[in-house]
Image (cartoon, rainbow, N blue to C red; front, side):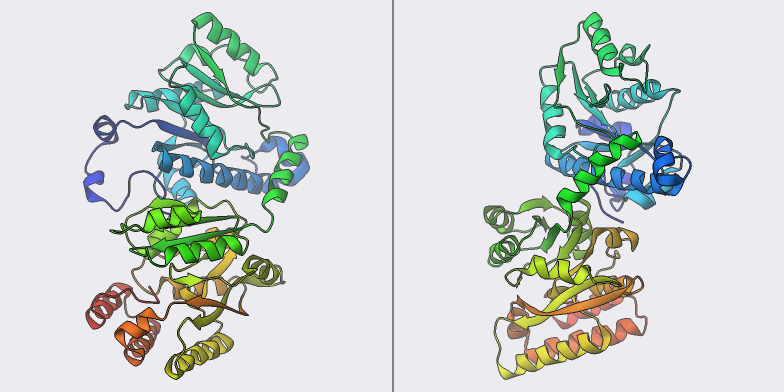
Amino acid sequence: MTDAPGLSSDDPSHQRLPVARLAAMNPRPALVVMTRLPRPGRAKTRLAPALGAAGAARLQRRLTEAVMVQARRLALRLPARLVVSFAGGKAEEMRAWLGQGPDYQPQLGGDLGARMAAALERALRRGAPRAVLVGSDVPGLDEAVLSQAFSALADHDLVLGPSHDGGYYLVGLRRPCPQLFEGISWSSGRVLAQSLAVARDLGLRVALLKRLGDVDRPEDIKAWCTWLAQRAGAVSVVIPALNEEETIGRSVVSALAGGAFEVIVVDGGSQDRTMAAAEAAGALTVASPPGRARQMNLGASLAQGEHLLFLHADTRLPPGWAREVRRILDRPGVAGGAFRFRLDHRPPSLRFIELAVDLRCRLASLPYGDQAIFLPAAVFRRIGGYPGQPIMEDVELVRRIKRLGRVVVSRRPALTSARRWRGAGVWKTTGLNYLMMIAYGLGIRPGLLRRIYDRADAGRPSPLA
């Protein structure tokens, strides 16, 4: 679904080089997430008596997705190589679930200790100066904890994250140490104590992180419910940007002032001060290869909120917009929504455009990207995110959302800059946009439509792209 941190599958130069050689060329710390494909009867079996086999598998899925968000954020910022050490499926199935980017590696070895030792040793042998391994069932795990683990390895041999049940949720090493994982009573309350005793015997300098709870037993489900309650209704705003220094600050401020849980600006290679302006306004900034769909998918993969809102860099949200998003998404049968289209410059010709958009939304429930499309993060994952196409990706996203439920357009307006219409001409811009819509509806390939649009509009970015 997403272009997550790590090597891009679209880069042929990376595809030609083996992983070991790439690691030697660019040694980065490794972050390893241990998980399994969430199949009923195979995932979180100790929770099945309370949740049923299917419910336990669904919980495993959500726990892993939450940990992967934090892992991606840390991997981008550090930067680190992100590895998913998996069981219960194939790499293709894991990639279809968690997206492109991480290095997917099957778990090797026998018991839990042997599998952890093998995953860490593999990362370290491939050139990582430090390797941290985490479980996928720790609701309280966040980017800050992961960052502390890597920092601790600067002057310690071993870092452990204690869990409330007497085990640990994280282990990090600077060199392979298989002895640390031998003779341990796994799945007992003595795991941490035994591991510390082994570390003492080996003369390892140990750092301990804060204690967190994992979700292994029915009594642990409360921790997950608490985590969910803290994020209930939270909206993460994702803004793709390219050379938007003049507008990005206002968009970020409107999002934060109206109740955003976080604002993530994904920059596609700006040559101006877009990222600095976004950071100054309070956004988390991430660099990405250009391409609006790619940028928005990357931003979504880093988002922590229950809901997602995709905002153009030259669009401002109305006051109190987050309450409106929650109000709409709480309606039965609603799978997504958007705001009313309004421009910041309104001569009669552009007011006509606004009326035409209002009519389209009433008749077809088909908002465009400059109307701040929003939807639950779970729906976004289910439909596979934005399609990887160079134009009309917003239209296609709305079509996919409508397969799962209604798309509701709020009567409250999001304010978009009229610069595109003023720069290229109102009727030329509008006519070209409608031509693209008709051609796309007739099945013309998006790549060809992008080339046609660029020739007709001298390379200006499309409001639909």
